[in-house]
Length: 210
Image 1 (tube, rainbow, N blue to C red):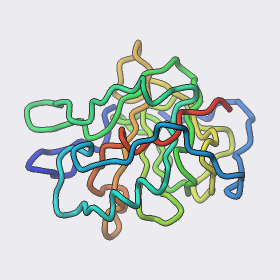
Image 2 (cartoon, helix red, strand yellow):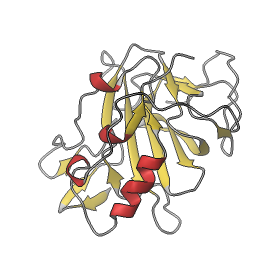
Image 3 (cartoon, rainbow, N blue to C red):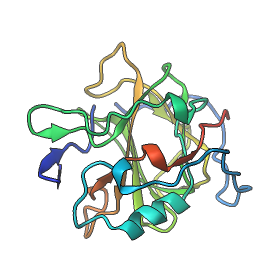
Image 4 (tube, rainbow, N blue to C red):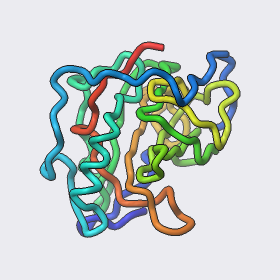
């Protein structure tokens, strides 16, 4: 949990067997992506509650990452911004739920390093990754499974398949989706638990099809 703007934000909205697909992880030095036309630079109004842990320089640095929507075939215009949706009486979502068909590929939104992979009762099958500068953390929850062979420490390029949309953990079984969260890297050992940033206006690229 993170306290942000006086509200408690849950680190997950809602198991761990590898799926069999054998796609390979694209190397980190893959050709750079070209930004889609119409990308709009973010402003503080787009990022939800703010606190002293998030500066304008943090937001500028995130925009420079030119994030890709992390679900294959998903375009930015179709995203529903539920970052500030209430979760109980004292929490907000602090993430995006991206609805998609079960087993739709989940993509690395940025050049990433895989930091944690595990299954739990809340997030189900999850992945935590950092950008290559270790400034930001990307959290993917409710996965149906991981890309076969993906491991902690792997470096993957933007647009690489890392997992598959599912409904594991406390997600509704009939509503597969990706719970996607962006955070500034936390201080100390709990690097995966920093303040969340609303990613909606930081997507510069639609989700590619592998």
